[in-house]
Structures are given as C-alpha cells and as structure tokens.
Image (cartoon, rainbow, N blue to C red; front, side):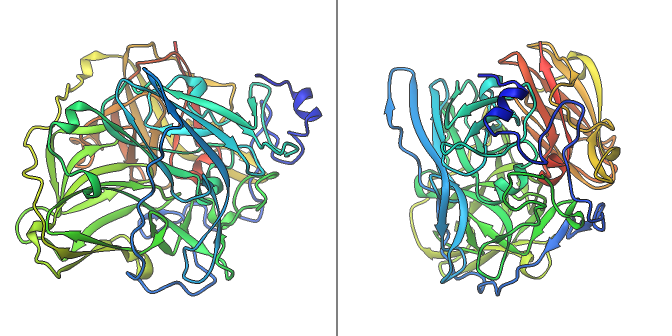
Length: 527
C-alpha cells in the first residue's frame, strides 16, 4: 500500500527531523568532520574503542547459526516466518548485550533454499522502528528486494520515521518472495532502512541465506558440520556491555547519521565471528568449507593463516559472491571488503592433530589483528579431493555491452547541516531520481571510480563480471560472478553488468554503511 505525506503525518510516521521528502537531504551531525576522509587500519573510517575490558582472545567456542525450519511446504514453495525483535545475548562473558535480531538472535537463523523452489519469508517487526529486508545477492522482484523506503512498520505502531510520498509501509509484517532462479550461492539478508542501515545492521540485523542445487552436490564438497558459515564483523562495547555506536539519535527514530568524527565509517575494536569474540573452532584433520562473509559496516580484512599449511595454499577458493567458480583459485591471503563473500576450502590434513592455526587480519592492529583460531582436535576420514572443474562459466565480452555508463563514488556535491555528503556522480540519494534505465536482458559496461577513500560498490539484482581494475586485468579476488567489488582510493573498475529477471527500480550504493546512510546511493530502473 502507498501512503501520501498527509497520511504519514496522520499515522504519526513522519514526526522527527529524519523526514525525507523529495528535494531534501538526510541529516547528519553538525558536530564537525574531523574524521571525514580518515583511513584507519586500511579501512575508511575511525576506530571506536570499547569502554569496557574485552575478553581474552580464543576462549569462546565458535557458534554456528541455526538453520531455520520452514513452517510449511507445498509443491513449489517453502514458507518461513521470522520475527525481528530485541534479544539479550552473552557476547562478553558474564554480561548481556542487547541486540536487534532476526528471531532475537545474532546472527539471524540461516535460511537454506534450493534452486528452482520458491522461498517465502514473512518478517514480523516487533522492534520500535521501521525495517526493510534486503536479500543481498538475490535475483528478486523490486517489491521484494528491500528497497530502502519500502518499510515494515512496528506491530506496536506509533513510531516516528522518515519517508517520501513514494514509500510503502506494511503494517507490522510483510511477505518476501524469492524465486531462487539462480545457482547455488552464499547470500545474506540484512536490514536496508533508509538512513539507518548502518546502526540497524550493527545492532544485529544480519543472517545467512544459502542456495543449494544438484550441480553443487555432485561435486563432493565438504558438507554437514564441515560446511561452516563465518560472519565476520567488528563491534565496540559500552561499559555495561551494550553495543557502542555513534548515532546522532540513538533511538534511530529521528535525525539520522553519525557524529562527525565517524563520517568515513565506524570501526570497532572487537572482532566477532558468528557473534562471538575471537572464537575457536575444533576441527578434524580433513578439508572444511568456509563461507566467509564480511558483514562489517566499514572494516576491510586481509585474512591469513598462522601457521601456514605444509604444502599447498592457505585458502582454496571455490566460490565468489554469486556462486561457485569454474575452477578453484589458490590464495595465501584473502582481501575481503564489506559484503563480499569468499567460499573457500581449508585443508586441515596438511596439519597434525594438536596443531593450532590462527586466522589473522594483517590489516588490523592490536585486538583487530586476530580473527579466530582453529584447533586440529581429531582424526577423521576426508571427503576426497576438490574437483579441478567446478561449474560452467560463460565469460561476458565487452562487445556484448549495449550501453556504457560512468559511476563515481566520492564526497561532495551535496551538503546537509553544514556537512559534505557522500554522493554518486556528485548527487545525494533521491528516491525519485533514476540515473540509469538498462533494458531487461541487456549487458552494460559500467566504469566505476572511487575518490577520497576506498569504496565497496554493490548493485542490487544485477550480477557482474569484473573486466579490468585500474587499467589492468581483474584482481585475483574478482573472479566469477560478483555483486560487490572493492575499489581503492582513486581506483577504477570496468564491470560488465547483466540485467535479467525483473523490470523495476533498484539501487546501487557503497557498502560502507556509513557512506550509504549519508547518501552514497542511487536508483536505476530496468525497463
């Protein structure tokens, strides 16, 4: 249902400084821009230090998010229900941290879908603010994509929130339909509310959504307890154990944005994996599959293993954002920007029982230089070799591109409250402005450029292949079908973007969530 501005005011949904109307800009702090172009630990942002003592590293066990069971199934569809609500979880030993979680947990429950079977997820909002849900990497219709102003109101009602006259507002719950017309892949779902994505994801609104298919299962890859999702995210904590985040309005119901020192991004000093600080996973001396997701707001990682395996690479990459590669890729380190996924094999048969291997972040310092630890605890039968050929891959050609477009991520061109905003092509996000109209079924060449600091570019609906980086061949981390690509400060990338599946309006944006919230986002409409 679509609401007019008058109706929003009548329902109490537009009371507050965060109201977004056509021609206006989202507010951010006027407290100064001390960290506006900061880069800290190889990431755009400023370090937010915890106000409490953090626990010793490598004492918590790695939790694995539970797989959600469908409430029912029929011949074509699996039906799920999720409630977004406040939860109290023990992240720091002996203290409770309030999180906003899918079913009250962080990370949210993992949804497992199958290619060719439709997935229905009804989200019920028991939080105090509006939400929307984006299936990151999903090929879905625009009304189910989690557009930033396509919101679910709290079931309690009576919340002040921002919107424009084009926004829809579901009353308390909404059904999201996913056709799953795509190959096996590691996707994730997260909040995407206009102006408040950063703090709402930081509070815990993120979870895995895995797609499986027959092709993947015939490859004999590690499965069961040896197929492990790893959601890596940094956080900072207040003295009472609550999450620390520098919101202008901590209630997330009025003025959006962060205080000026954090305009470039919020970096925490505690590394969480699946919601646990620097955890430990006991493994057998066999191959394991790890689906690594960088779910941090602003932090990038360069992951390494200490100790290195005796022969062979540290990581054998088998998949990227949008699914399996055609052939495995060997890496001794992984550079992973926000929202990217790397599907990798770590072969613990290269180690001895009793060995301990630390996954480190060589872009981190002090507490952020460690991520987690593996302990080889037992012997077991291995799953067999990883095939040298994985899935067929059709490489796009530059000659297929029917249109060429230039996209620049930078700071400047628009202001709010005396602050220069993050922009796309020099303009702040306007829900009513379309910057591109690609045709359904077409391939386009997009030239992406980053300025001021590094930016991870993400596009909804449309997967892409990286044609070049900075005038050279693609990076070793850019193989396969992608939906997110990392750009260094001043970096350039040529992308061949394929628009298929649905017509309608979608967004592209920077996946540094503080940049996104401060207007580094734009619309395109598939026609």
